[in-house]
Amino acid sequence: MGVLDDGERVEPATLDEWSAWLASHHADTPGVWLVSARRAAAREFGYEAAVLEALRYGWVDSTQRPLDAERSMQWFAPRRPGSVWTRRNKERIASLEASGRLEESGRAAVDAAKASGMWTLMDDVEDLVVPDDLAEAFARHDGSRAHWDGFPPSARKQMLGWIALAKRAETRRGRVEETARRAAAGERSR
Image 1 (cartoon, rainbow, N blue to C red):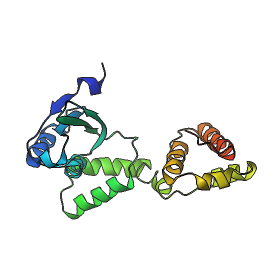
Image 2 (image 1 turned 30 degrees about the vertical axis):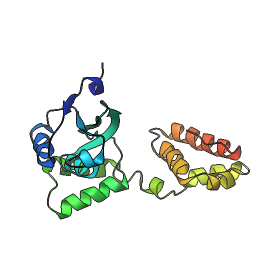
Image 3 (image 1 turned 60 degrees about the vertical axis):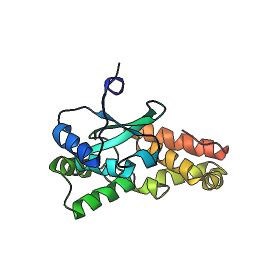
């Protein structure tokens, strides 16, 4: 079984309890399932508040699963060094900084992301900027750019992210070429 399957479940009654749990365990726990009511009206605190508290300590949310008819659970874990930062989470960090609520461990996660380039890696992706190598590949594949421009923004973002996350130059070149080739045929890659 994996860490998600074996993960502890925490069901705080209040935001203060969730914050206290993070303060006590953020440095010694691989992750936790935050259990909450499925219906927003039945929750003491919502997703946005839960995420803000997690970010304070350098944690991030991911997978959500149903637990039973009344409850669901969301996985929260320490942010990995190579994880990307979305614009929305960077805005949340700015809010935490402005209010003086960002904890030392949260600051360390931000500093590590800035040092590694992960802080800004997805900026152009979120702005749907076509990188030069992809534009060149479009020029080699008739009709690819027209099809690309017709794809929904969410599809373009997914494909641009797939390209941006390539770890090796060879992998990136292959992803760029596949994206342009498939776009020429009116197909989405990845």
